[in-house]
Image 1 (cartoon, helix red, strand yellow):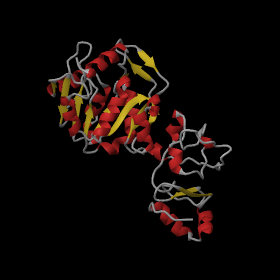
Image 2 (cartoon, rainbow, N blue to C red; image 1 turned 60 degrees about the vertical axis):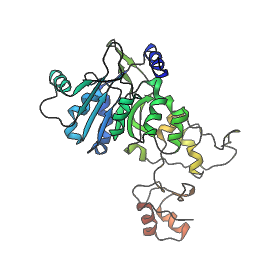
Image 3 (tube, helix red, strand yellow; image 1 turned 30 degrees about the vertical axis):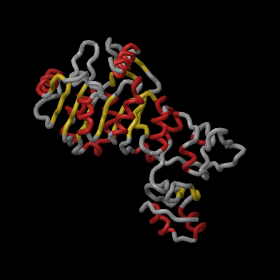
Image 4 (spheres, rainbow, N blue to C red; image 1 turned 45 degrees about the vertical axis):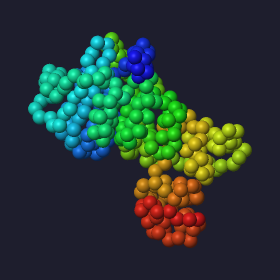
Amino acid sequence: MSNGDNLRIAKSNKNDEFYTQYNDIIVELQNYSESFKNMVVYCNCDNPYESNFAKYFVRNFNVLGLKKLLISNYAINGNDALRTQINSVTGDVCTEDTYRSFIKEHTEVSNGNGSFDSPECIELLKEADIVVSNPPFSLFRDYVDLLTLYDKKFLIVGNQNAISYKNCFKLIKENKMWLGINMVKEFMIPDGTIKKFGNICWFTNLPNHKRNEFIDCWKSYNPTDYPKYDNYDAINCDKTADIPGDYDLEHLMANGLSDSELNKYTKEGTVSNETVEDDEPILVFDDNGKFIAKYANVEEASKANGIAVNDIKDCITTKKTYSK
């Protein structure tokens, strides 16, 4: 028996099967519709007959403009490992009967066990542009490592505690993974009952509007209020409101922020503003992401640097940097 099989036996003994509900999928995925156009989507932890991810992508195949949909599942609880490939969707797939009939036409039994890291599923993964699924929580580290290894875009469900996993934190720190829009609070479990959680969220590397929300860091750094860790070059911030706006952004990325703080944190571009309003605060960083200065508005930035207001606006909207 392989180590992978042992892990999956342990997983099943932990009651690690939680099925994402259809409405939660709709609420989150509606924020990424542009990302799916002409893409190959792979749901690699999903029974094509039962998974709401599979149902969502089949029923919205044409609306999203998908190029191809791949689906596979792990053989567990007496179920076969299946693989599904869909290149187009025509006709009615809205009712349960028509959906299952459609899936049957496009599905075959896998040669292997259907594990997301099996050779057969890795070949499917290589075809995919975006992976969307709810992987086993107990195998989340391995799952993220696999997606990273093959440089895939993804939108996946996981425990918020995964932020503190070494591999996940590194990706967040390097701006290669961030959190989605919503929390997922209820799941269906195999016996048909609902299991409630308070710490399940979406992880992704697809762009979303929440990632670009501006945080007004109005406090100033001083070593008394922000002591550094003894064993790491970072300061402690207990909450978002305490983040000092004049502290090196690269250090902020490594701060000991709580999970909820990281949920709000974002780093995008060389300046804080996507658009420029005259009364908006402006944070300015150099090309390496190092904090330069904070100004209450464009006029203040102009006076402090001897640069015309329009030139300041041009620097911001074109993602250029200027020096103090």
